[in-house]
Picture 1: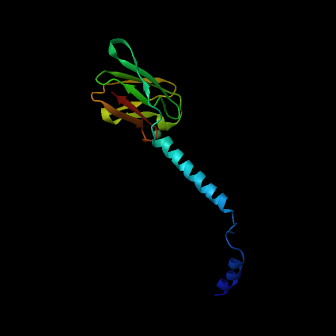
Picture 2: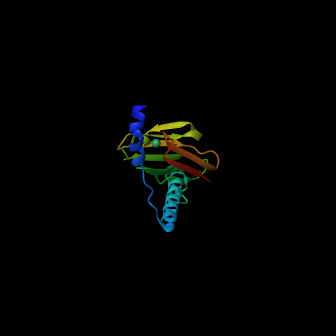
Picture 3: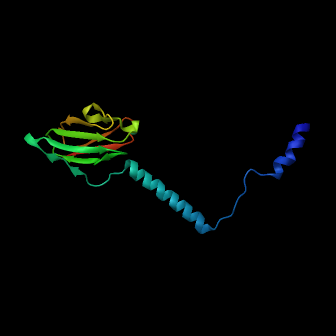
Length: 147
Ligand SMILES: [Cu+2]
């Protein structure tokens, strides 16, 4: 009882925070900028960036492309011809463990990407459409677009 009486005036005298009134225009600006950043983040992680890059055609109709792995896959959208083998060469310079593995769910294949090396995988897209691939945590994404 004594303790309670002693603390109460102290707590009431110093509020934990103080509201600082801001002009309405500034409040609106903060909300708009915040929403724009949310949209930009969603686009960055989930959106499609560009129409894709076409894989080059080598000997015996094998399509090939080198993908730089550095904070993402570059290019991340790769256009290929359906029914022909595709060789993807991943060159990883990103030390993040996030991109140490790339997974191709439609092909049930997983590829380990050693740092500083180029690692290849051969795939055969048998039907038209997208064949997404992603890192081990499904954060970094790309897609083969077979047409
Ligand atoms: Cu990851």
